[in-house]
Amino acid sequence: ILRMLPWRERLMEGMLGADLIGFHTYSYARHFLSSVLRLSGLEHEFGRVFVGERPVKVDIFPLGVDMDRFTAAC
Image (cartoon, rainbow, N blue to C red; front, side):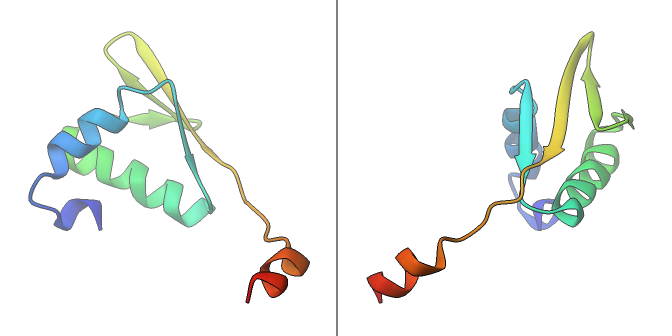
């Protein structure tokens, strides 16, 4: 989706300004890293993108849903 946005470079540049970028699934992280390579030419290695000398860690943080609380809210 990132590559389809007209302001994709600015959005990616803003995200790469963080030290850590988290995604819900492995696929989301993989697609982001693929977009970084295609849009900026920055290589990634073991979940890290180097922006100049600064490493940006890309990692996966799966989140669960508290079903009791979710059901009670409905």
